[in-house]
Length: 477
Image (cartoon, rainbow, N blue to C red):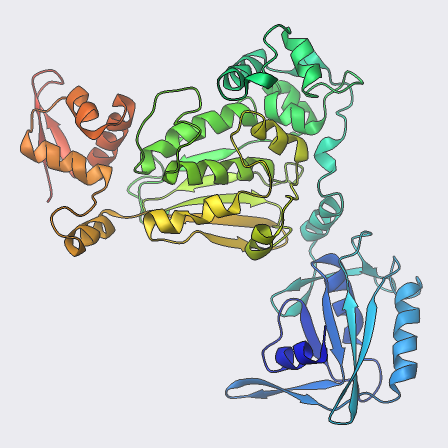
């Protein structure tokens, strides 16, 4: 950090990777809590010799310097490198700055490879939350331990596992994808066991790694190794649980593995976006650049970056106004860093690799640009949130009101949602059949049925008479 960068930070506010401390009386005791927090979270800079003054307009930072900077710098470096203060040695970068003839010290504390870093005298572990240091809970300490093996835990062998723990229906479905979209990896002349060894689904030792088991395993085998495995997908008819007309309209039954969950969730998500339906084994076609493509990229990353060793389980909630994908485990990088990196840092490398083989995900990076293109397609930005335990990605959905407003702004030919188009067709012809609706809307009959059920649940339409000879009645405009 240059002097100019430091001055710019001092004119701003404290962030999660930057903290100032007054040190006129020597090394501040709170410094060690911040060292622990930075070591356990994302690293950061500690600036000594700067006083924070609270004002009605916010914090103001006053440079007051440190006494005997040479001795203080040496004492701090010695303490961090020894094991007298912490349970592990701390490497750091020390800088000295002179501002208006006043000396201040800066220490860059990196994310430690030996997490969790605890204060030795009391065993306390701290994490960074916002611009403050917080004592970690037991669950957060467990998460820190798992983060320390980020990218490696799911690659470990599952004791006692073998080819017989794989669900052969899942393998057959996966091989079908490969035949259509990456034939060079389909190996049609190999039997299932030979194929699994060829793609390293079965390791050279004959065992499975946790990633392979999670992706294609039989449910009983998966639960033997990871008893908390469950991807919980639910559709809620409202903007929140409180406003929902019922608890949920659909909840996905527990699936065998990640691959089976992925396929079923993609078929469900198709109902919530405006996207042309293209029949095919990849659900919508590999070159598709619609809203569904953005969701697919998000779902692949959701599956590949979840912490399956946590006590919590990954959840997806589809509300009327948004789709929320929530995973146990924090984002290891923020969204801007995702975009700037050439290579990805997946929590579960073998899982992301198995999604990439049939070209269901980007070949490099997190596919973050595909996810962020949601704003261009819908006018609403995807949001990212994360703490030590949970990471959340939210896709806002265009409500009926939003769609109507866009139509008004663009005239009579303005864009309409599938739901609005369906209502218009029913207005024109109350006796219209589901088959006709499917043909006119360019969507599958199952997709038509989904929208009809939602409209009935929302009290917008009802069926009068028999399914064959009856007609639709609009209950509201």
